[in-house]
Length: 295
Image 1 (tube, helix red, strand yellow):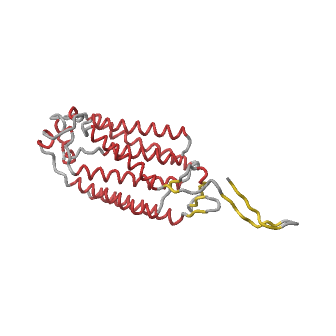
Image 2 (tube, one colour):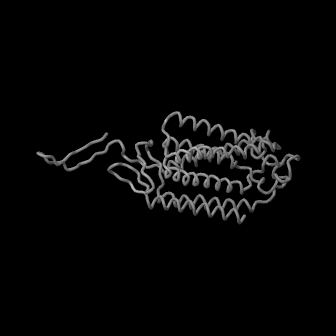
Image 3 (cartoon, helix red, strand yellow):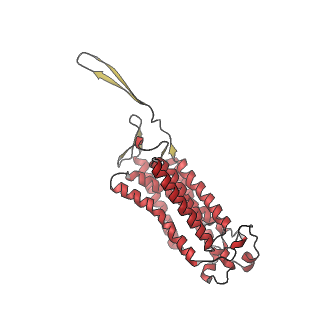
C-alpha cells in the first residue's frame, strides 16, 4: 500500500512539474498565430481547430482532483471486506445479468489484462514520430498530461464505486474459482475498471486525434481499432467472471464520458482564418503604409 501511495504521489508531482514548465514557457504570438513553447515552434495551421492545449486554470485543479480521487479510491478499496455468501448467492440481478452468475474463466481474465497494454501502441508511435522530428515533443508532453488526467479520474471514480460493494463479482458463486480470486476486492463488481479505462483511452484517442491528425484515414482507423479493442476487453471481463454485462456497460459509458470531456475542456479557439499586418513602406520615390490581409 505504501509503495502504491509513493508511486501515485510521484506521478502527481511529475505531471504538475510538466504542466508548470509548459505554462512558464508558453505564449501566443497573435501576429503569426504560432504557438511557442520554449522548446520548439508549432505552426497552428498544421493542426485542426479548435486546438487542444494545456491551460493553467484548468489543469492544476484537474490534476489535484483526479489524482486525489485516485488516492482516496485506492484507500477505500483497501478497506473492503471479503464477500459473504448471502452477498452474492441471494443478490438481485438484472435479467440480462442473471445468466452470468457463477461464470469463471482464468484464461479470459489473463487475456483482458494483457490486451489493455495494446493502448501503448499509439503512444509508442507518437514517440517515434517525435524522435524523427515529424511531430513536436511538446505536443506529446501535452497529451501525456491530459491522458494522465483522464486515466486517473476514470480509475479514481471506478475504485470509489467499487468500494461501495454494490454487488459481488460473478465468480464468487463458482465453487471452482480459486480462493485468491475471492478476496475483498471481489465484493465490488460494479462497475468494470477495465471497461472504463479502455473506453476512456479510446475516447481520448478519437477526440484528440481529430485535432492532431485531421486526415480521415488516420481518424477512422484509430477509432475503429481502439473501440474494437475496448469492446473485446470488456467482453473478456464478462467471460472471466469478473463482471456482469451491466458492469461493463456502465464502465464503458463512464469511461467514454471522461475520455471525451477532458480533451474537450482543453480546447481553445483561435481565429486562424484571417490575419493581417500593417507595416511602414519605404521606397526610392514613395513612402507610406503597406496593409496585408491573409485569408
